[in-house]
Length: 374
Image 1: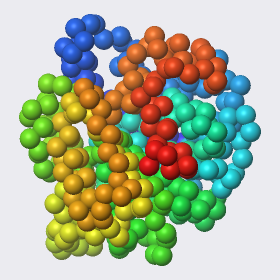
Image 2 (image 1 turned 60 degrees about the horizontal axis):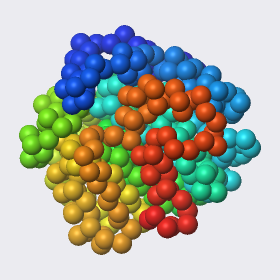
Image 3 (image 1 turned 120 degrees about the vertical axis):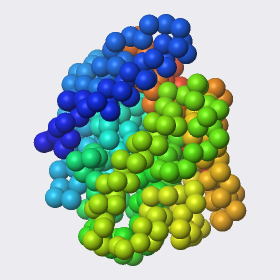
Image 4 (image 1 turned 120 degrees about the horizontal axis):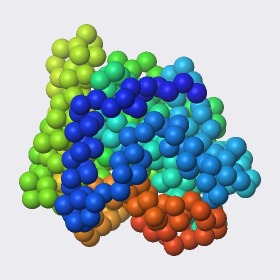
């Protein structure tokens, strides 16, 4: 499968700045020297990262069924897993199918960097006695691929699950972390009120059954108070998010300038804290919503404010928020890439082994179809 973001392996100045900032933060927070493997894990090309995971003793027996590429005219993705490890089956047979949208500020990361995280998530769900399929979208990164191209790809992938794989909408979970959470909400708004600049047909497509948001990025402009108060406890900062947001909005303005004369008319595809015009969240959102946010992250206030807004609009039923005390931005994913010893221990084990990456396991618990955790 052709690398859709070939420049990712050749880091740009902005990317180096992010890596250095993360390294300095973790050194300051832990008072330890950061293991170089942590930096390598989030900067090396996706093929190297996926090879390290799939060739491990844990996943080697199943590797021919894992991380299978999907290359279509209108989107690219990877089937992380289809139904189970030992007995793969069509996603339509699964109890749950996740369309996963990765984070990275729209300018970094690849599905490969989330492979271990998503496989551990699958193990948790399968361990509960249910089956799971996970499709990770490999969307184009900015600035080479200006927004809303990512929205078009997400819509095409959702359409593929419904019409090509025949997955019932009620069994689909739209999930995303950080910028992926932003893209998930943009997709849901687009399903309700299609953006005319996107040619992917979404008219009359049903809503998914569930929404899972991990530290979602909800505003590309606004700066809540925790941008300042939590700047020393998170690995990202308010100024960093502000710069990343400007990059997305800059490409957005250019790509849609010929289709719209007023930016306010389209803000509700990118602005979810105070959109103009307003968003009918009751009509847009699915019936089951789970949100994870860390108490130490800079996005805390914006996420809790958004949750309050949607609970007023649609009621509290079906909306569950988990606040990770003392946790930073997308801590569940970070635990799968920052601790080399734990990662090696996990990959040297068997799929049946438990007890590592418990924070990922907690996410898996909310995705069971029994409804116990919803």
